[in-house]
Length: 616
Image (cartoon, rainbow, N blue to C red; front, side, top):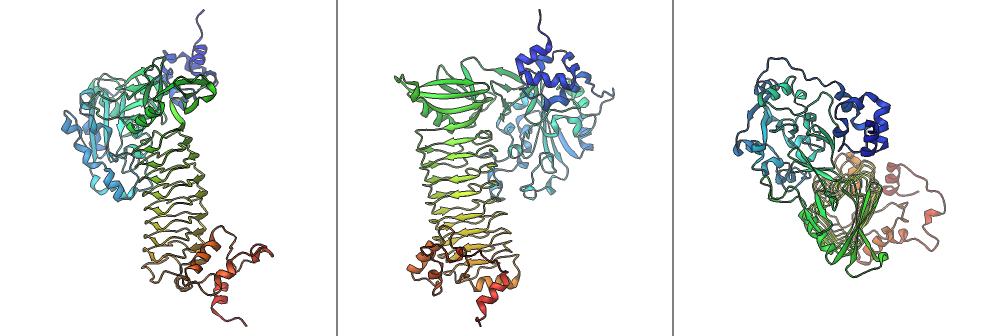
């Protein structure tokens, strides 16, 4: 007896998926070919329910009178043209920000190509796709830097230059975005439905090119595409290839992996030959792989080892065992995969990692990263991950530019051996609360910017700090006892109360901005007030803070780690520390003096009066 549609979908997509459809609308099971339609849709039916419902009554508005697509796009405010050759395909490239442009605007680049479309690197794209490139008539008035930090896929900038691409053999459409991978799913702009640009464009394109591309009024959410009429849930998109847990979609065709192959992010790993292959390499004019550094490091780790795959439910675990070793207890897990994406990575022997390791969304689902022997990382490694919560790099000494950017859930950071940090590392780590970097001596510009939950920073060995470092909404205390020079626009936050810089002799402009709550600023070696010192602070308070930079209030909470030690260092070097201040701040055997009674908090200006006026 043939199985019911419910039973087929239950076996294919899981019981939860099948029951969700039945509970929502049992009529969806009557859609012709529904089992094949959802074959690659994953196991979360709720996200695509509106689309599944729309399949019951698909109707494309056909008027019988079609306007030319270019005429409709002109009405929508675009200058558009049909692409017939490579020059026309790439003519719009000048409108897309390069990596150098983004660096000048202090915007994190999604890849080495900046925000340029993958299309520009595919010389055969126009041969396989019908392409219309469209540029807003006022494009020169829409500037990329005006949207820094506020990028949205369908905002004015993102949609000011678009590329509509329809597979010539039908079944697939993509509308490309000017931001490219700076925003999620840039290839699904307007939900890849031309009618969302201007009404009637879908039927106009169908009529003009005599092809179907399955655009519906109900659209699929981010992370899904249509390929050959099938709903596909994917993990990554690179070079117009969509990667799922055990398949990839290329040029609208779904390629399922063989039994001895597993998906590792955007690579196919062959368990028999121990090789990694990138589906985009060597075809359609693609010359480079997306993450060659990961491939190099991974293959070096498994060299001379047997690779063992273990599974539990929807998770895969990849272990290595030395050749000749028979004891399973000595197996080392190097990868954990869920739905083909890396969630945990362990590199037990790697000592050096080059540039662009796990970049371009390849770390998107990474939860933990461990490399106990790693000493150096190159440029642009491990960015844009919303899941990373654990970093174990006890021997890391050097960190290249632009590493660990946009880590949305990292709460603590412990890198005990790190001495040098390149620019813009740990930029936008909003949940970071604890930092331990005892050996760090040099930090380039833009590090720890937008770390809004970090309250206290103590970096005992830091000597040099570049501009735009240490900004956060909750930043309250900063203690940098060895710091000598700092660039412009450093150390700021509306709740900042205490800044201890006993050795700083050089400070850039616009430091301590928006620090209206600042009560203690100790910088005895700083002789010249920088221009625009502590902007947005009341003028009288700014003047007094500067005048009292060589003194500390008596009730400073010296129990904080490092402050008294820092002041003892200053005293031993006979700095300009006021007489008696260090002695007052050195904790006694019974602990700080202010530990005997609860601290009575007084207003800032009352304390200033006490400092300036003699006591009666």
